Length: 372
Ligand SMILES: *Cc1c(COP(=O)(O)O)cnc(C)c1O
Image 1 (cartoon, rainbow, N blue to C red):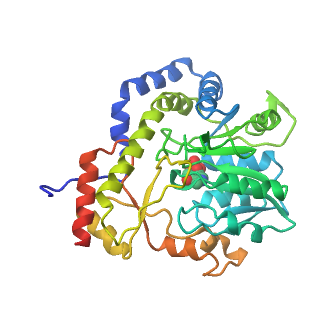
Image 2 (cartoon, rainbow, N blue to C red):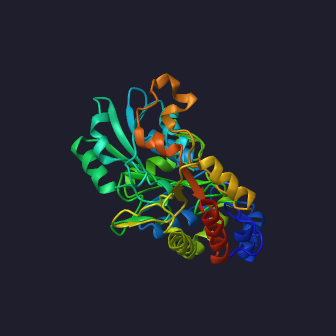
Image 3 (cartoon, rainbow, N blue to C red):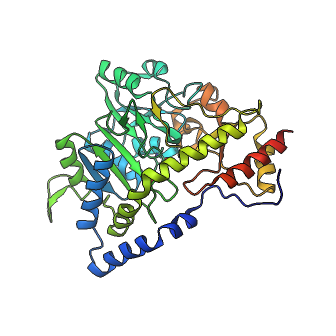
């Protein structure tokens, strides 16, 4: 039973920093002392390490996850007059990058169980303008990427992966980022691997694409002041690269901790009929960026938890196709029943690599009292 009120933050970045403070402080010091702040050896080292852990040939480090998506679009000449299939249930940036590249996002509903793109609904959205499918591995669970890839191959479409929430996630024992021609990652502070600021990356097994992406992220240049392409400045800061190299070493253990926390939630919450817990897809290695449940009365639920010191969040309250920014695309309410229904009922429970069993026990006790 609950003995005293606790505070359960949604995510505890401070505790994570203090657990690795010495290593981080030393890494930062090295960058300052070398005065190599942009590009250079720290970035290259991180690119090699990140590619290695994802068992992919190449990695291009960039300044955030949205740039990573944009870089994939630019490098594959996805632009004006092209359409890209994007899940309606994702963070806005997945679609935004398509638009910023000049192309048009065409949304598809999620499936009933897993919140990811429903492969069975993709073909109906394909037109003569469709150039690519952007699969998103949402909440840390891989999308059904083999079924999606089959459709991409059948229709001659480019397959891209948004892995911003899925560092180290696997499907059929293969890391995400290896199924499409390229995959993008975000290292936003709250992601499973987070920088102390903004950062992102693209991975690929295609050498030509890798070389082109390295140029585009650096003003279309392979040799300083010689510009073969019109690119952009998407470079990662050295400081972030050095921090990410330290944190990457801890990522496998942190991922196990997230999975353990998810297991505890399942054990403690299994008898509450009002809750829908997140199912794991067969053959999926889910890395629990988020532990998303569904509740009937979300406002009451979230408020009750908050009053008792437990902080929750919503990912995401408004589906992409109903955002004001996409009014011009003329999607009506009711276009994507699952995405829209779930947007009103989903709640993300506290989740991080710093969550311990006491915090999960307390949180689930509060949830039980709410429903009793
Ligand atoms: C975080 C996120 C992004 C954007 O990454 P930033 O680093 O914040 O630009 C893109 N897609 C998804 C699914 C995300 O969760």
